[in-house]
Length: 409
Image 1 (cartoon, rainbow, N blue to C red):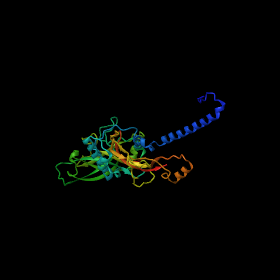
Image 2: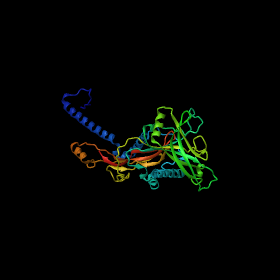
Image 3: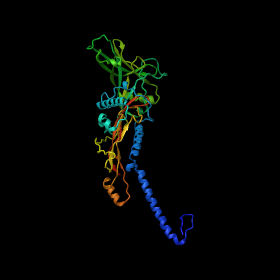
Image 4: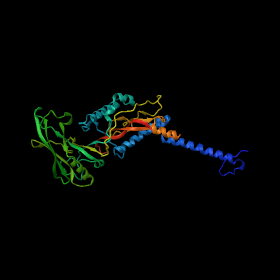
């Protein structure tokens, strides 16, 4: 006679002990299966069969995390004019080289119109030392183009208005300078004849009047030799500003204090102002360069070293570092100027008690089902150059974007 076990069915007394044993066995097997599912859920990457799926998921997580660290609510829908970029990194050879390599790679991709494998790009592309950073702090630079004041404030007088983004108000300004476009004096002068004048920068109030002089700098340029024919005979000169003044302007803007509207620049030579303001003349090359930190620093540094990477499809099964290329152009992140891609790396592989260290070995000896997962234990940051929704240029060092070493825990 067959019996079908059910919590609702009457159970014959002579077989109750046997059915009780079977029920206990069923509970044990269920708990074991549940433990396996929990392990799989905790570390999907430990299963080599799902490694590619895990890499795709990790890439999406990295891009989402990067948006937050760049303080962007969404991916900016902007078009970068690569022919009219500010002189980014003029004082920093590393950043300048990073941008130059990025522009070369973009032109190469457009010309060939084909997908690049990472190995090919790595031979002809970036040196990781250009974008990786050891600094735990997040120094950053923004380039704000000068524009005409909004219509409700425009009084028809030369004024450089700057559209400060909200994130600037939460930063500590460490250095600031105004890049002033100055036009050619007289084309008839000798190229070897020096032209001397002084650049004076004033605050412009909302009522149109001028405030205090906030910066001044004497300049000496050659009549023709210092001018770029491709820039409509304009030379751009840099004048340092007081950090406290810039922070005051930013805070006034975000606290709706109608005091300083913008800046007015004088560069008089022979009774004529050579400084070009937005909306006055064809050139609109004036911009404000601001260097900042967000205060999240701990002074710690990591050594620039990577654990040896393993190749997918190889014989290596232990916890190891693998390539994970984040390609901004493939992701549709056209607002990123440089780098166009970088290697974030990803950890994957099996973990044993010996890889987990002494503590893991001790726990393993006590608890037979101790679980370990391969994960990054050391990170590096990256330097990224990008444009925000307001077409402001930024240079930021973003921490914890590159896995350097893996471990089991």
